[in-house]
Image (tube, rainbow, N blue to C red; front, side, top):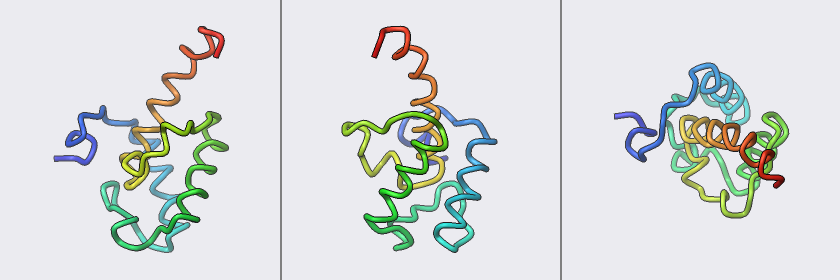
Length: 99
């Protein structure tokens, strides 16, 4: 069972997963799989986690809100991709409501 299915999340687009896999593999200096927990593997610390959040905000053009700062949103590439996908789909609705 994939990491996203286990947490009831839809499957993010493969191109997004591939893009994040490339980036996260570079910043961790490790070839990662989409469901590898880089926190559990000791590849990411709290400072690197902030860098990941900043990368996602800058690259995909959204703001990570305080309530989004749940480690489960970021601990694997699949989870990070699902998070990005959800945020991107929420942007048009937030803009339409004036937020």
